[in-house]
Image 1 (cartoon, rainbow, N blue to C red):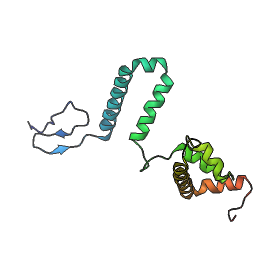
Image 2 (image 1 turned 135 degrees about the vertical axis):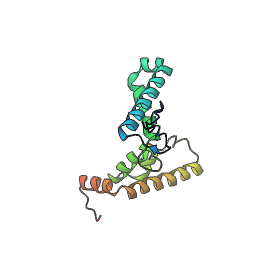
Image 3 (image 1 turned 90 degrees about the vertical axis):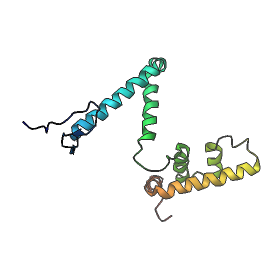
Image 4 (image 1 turned 45 degrees about the horizontal axis):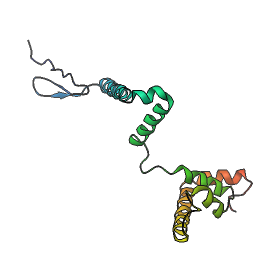
Length: 152
């Protein structure tokens, strides 16, 4: 009778060690199930910890958790863009002039001093132009919708 029976660990995702010391990896299904079980356990813990918020507004609770997961498990590298910049870029491509964009998309623009306003305008213009540079399809899409050609 051989003593090559594997010693099993109760920890999910652990490797199986045989008596002779060779390590065998757990099958992929076991690791996926362990991950699923851990994620479920964490979700239940969150729901218990924030029970009052969940009972008051379950849709908002789910949206908040989803947003947090999106930030942690982001597939694209780098920071997310500001939604105001995306909206301003769409408006700019449609032909809206810069002064109108400043008042519509920069917070507290009217209350700023001249110096701060100039800095905010420069930064805003750089961000919008950078966004349009990195999203050329969006620029082309809006230009064709309003009847412009790509060469104009």
